[in-house]
Length: 465
Ligand SMILES: [Zn+2]
Image 1 (cartoon, rainbow, N blue to C red):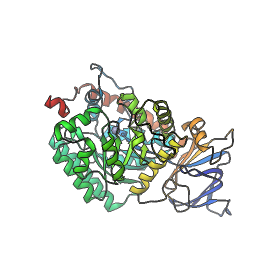
Image 2: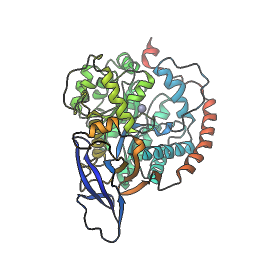
Image 3: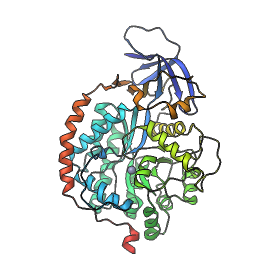
Image 4: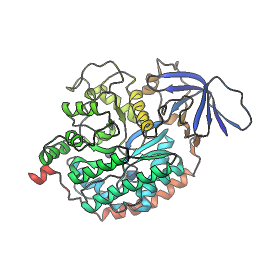
């Protein structure tokens, strides 16, 4: 069966921008032709895309689907005063309340909401200390059912004790072995690790060894808050990134979330490593942890939501606006003209950051043309209902992205050649029923959450001091 997206304006590449008008021909999971209309043969389904913009599917390069049922959840403790208290009193209570049913419902809701806003890949970092074994299979199964692509990892940590740390590592090992054996079409794995300040040397070594033997990288929070850096210096005598590098965990396959408090020497280590850093501007603002030194980080900076939905139009736009606002107030603001650099203030910044996310996914799936609308690339595409009121060209795409486009325009979504959203509705399941079915699961999750107290784990500098 061939599918043709007919007569749209096609964004062949977000960055560098490349735009043509014509058809996209999809056969099985791949784009087979782009350009002038071919002769439509029998067995061809044509989706009329006149007046529409066809773009590569967006990538959310760092998220937590397990938080999908968190919105509106009850909270009875004293308000958190800093980032570590946010973890102890909010997220490290929610993750312990998760069971198989709520992991499954969270995964469904996260996948639904991502697809409906034009995000076709989630790079997920999962934690459920009460239900570790098999949790990544649940995510893969539900994501696959709705048809979203994913790169999965379990958040290995010592904060719940060495038994849980071992179980977390085992879950990554088990899932990576399954991926290696079965090569599922839509899922890959990384080795998940929480953050330096909740990882013992032995556990970090175990994560690195597994990443090396599995030919993949770590997915780890790095210097999200100053507490992570203080702990690394106090407990290990090194900065967070130096510690990671000394353990052998900093290489081209690594996915580092946040990097808010990286200093110049760490930024240099990062740039030399070929790793990808995922900037999560809305989460950083929400937690008031600061802003990554983007001007020091080079081109390999992608964007994530850190669990605040999966709307990459919003994330990229807000991230750029915040960057513009702060550029004159930050010491890292060095005038850089190329949007390839994460410190650039060029209007193409959002597109360059999203292209960096697509490159990461392409590396994990061994698909060099991933994220481009070209023959031979995986068919992960979004059709935006966007009759542009001003000329839309290579030169104006970035301005349209910043000031015109939004998730509201998402009409159809295709992942690996499968139409997973058609006319703003999921094709695999009834999305209203999915949401309705999730609500009682959320209620039960919240009831369990209410019985769980503040987590007692403390970073090293607090234990030492
Ligand atoms: Zn995160």
